[in-house]
Image (tube, rainbow, N blue to C red; front, side):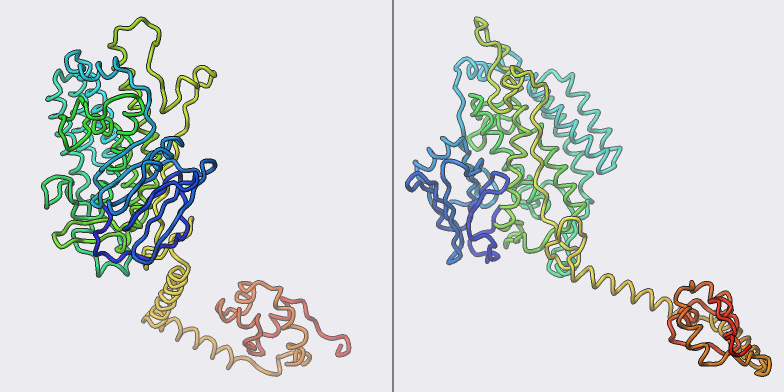
Length: 515
């Protein structure tokens, strides 16, 4: 959902195009992808702000090449270069919809495709649809129960999942899936979407909550009207591209589905495979929303209210592609095995190859552990006050952290001033002052030791007070802790009546010359 042509993009920080997490995303105008002397050359940018990358066949680290928009070209040699390196090419429209996806193609077995085409007659389509929807509803139930903490919605989804297990038609499964989805997205409506305080004046009110999954522009999820739904649509488009690539890699026809009706506008099998993985994307977005605010500059609102994602932000979201591909792989292989089980063969091949997860290869090697899923890249961390980038482990940027600390000190000081001027404090202060004046009037100079002079205090008592605890001085003199700290630091010289107790504390005695 990259912004349209008339949107001024932010200046890019990348001058040399390099893959991140195996993903390279190109956007802008005049995009070029071609081969020059065995190297893959990629160019993108907006206006004079151009960027270029050059990749050799060894050590490039490229797994997915994602292009957003349709202004530019890719040569046939570049497509061949990507195929030789087993790297996929994905093309998305600026509104986030999938245009094309090509990748490594597995051996096409006519028996497998024939089984896929006849799945409705063999009733295997019902089993596949039931399992995919069951996994989807189970994931939605966990989110509603554990993350959204809506037990009523979770119970409704659980009931729908139980009914799917015994459903005898695909139409019934579709109806139950829709019923569960309606309850599920109801639990999302009041989810709060945060923006930095510096951005709030430029954020429309309807952007501050998730709202409904259906856009008011289309009465469907298409053309989202707020950022959260726009992000969800874009991540689903990435998942759809991975589902299509997985189906093709296993020799399946991505257009022949079981749950979704075949139409010219989508690959029905890819949409079927997506159902089991959608809750993972939902959980990713939900955790993001609850941990980090969005930036206003990541989004653009068109004149009709359609919320689009800025191109730079799409680049960060595209980095999650590999994670969704790893999640869709075992689902696609399960569908392939299920279809294969209906084929009458001579037994030469017991099950189709596991090109995506390499499960058969691990079994042969005796490795019973599955390949760990690559973690989804963490969303960008921003300061909730100003929106500036924040380092890992920090909640605010350095300037805002200092400002918050200073503000906390000012509040404490203000609270102290208010407490100091309360009626109760005034009464206590008056009583203390009267007690101090009475002690000074009752003190007599002739009772004071002659050797305990001001010089003796300065030379023998004051230097030793640094080793005495403040609370000890305060208790000995019956003064406040604050005043005792001033005495120990030498900022205040106490009344002569206090010198004798202080001399006793530090162990200063009468000089021998005076005895």
